[in-house]
Length: 185
Image 1 (cartoon, rainbow, N blue to C red):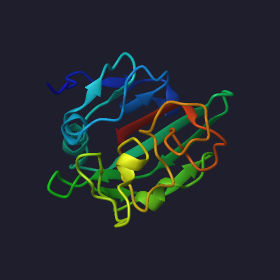
Image 2: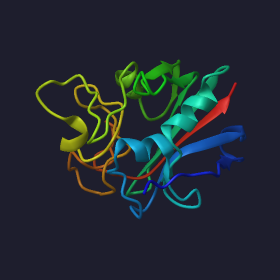
Image 3: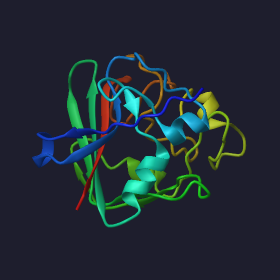
Image 4: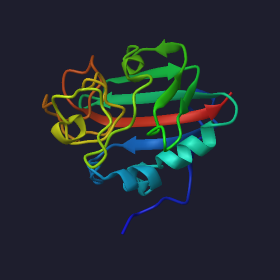
């Protein structure tokens, strides 16, 4: 049975409000090592850790211009963010490729740009460009893997430097908190 989310979580205070949250992690209570259908349809609880669903994200962002904010906090409560002036995904047939990623601003570093154009991969639907290994399986998560990743926000919730942990390149260990939010421009 596949869990699906039917509610939305909006952030009304940060960055002038009006943001729709599509990914949130903070305590490891939800396992993000899920199959394609789970990532397509969404899972978790909007009151806790969750992934909204690739199809919902695609349907929301296919019309007009949307921006993205990625919030990050490590286990020492160091906070950083990355903001992109545009964000959009391809269709399911296009494997929900990260098709739009605009100009970067913020404090986290412009590392999501390395994933632009990449197709989404899960352990049962490999779409990365590395022919020698299966990135979603090896790094125990799901993401817009290239060869394999610079960022990986759907990895394992851990404060270790392990390659399967939630990662952004300038963090010294895994991340405690991540949140990905979109807003129509």
